Image (cartoon, rainbow, N blue to C red; front, side):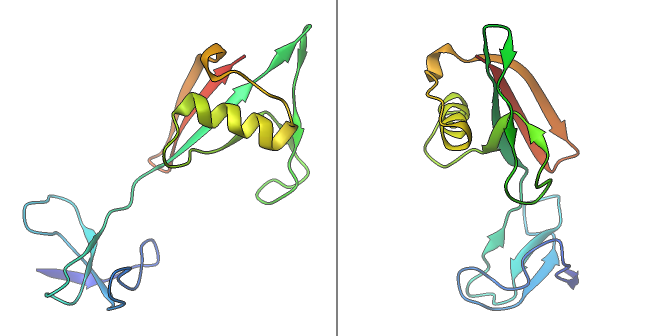
Length: 130
């Protein structure tokens, strides 16, 4: 059953074949998904929250902060954080982000989970302390 054409919150075209997508509930599912309009393809574009990892690093009672150089929030200060990459653990990702953003080497095994945040289904954030 086709409910409507794809909205701006999902892909307008199938990533497999390029056919316009349709917003509908696939057979065996209970949620609306963006589905390829070509029945011979039928690719389902699942959209899930992004995983963000970060590290709050301290040394001698000082906290490491980075000034953002890109949008969003360009110019603002915060702890090292970014998106988890495929093939890495959340601890490895937090250590990588600390290296990329501040040039500081962190041993992933030393990271202690500090907090988990769920931002309205948009992001899941895992913040570590080191």
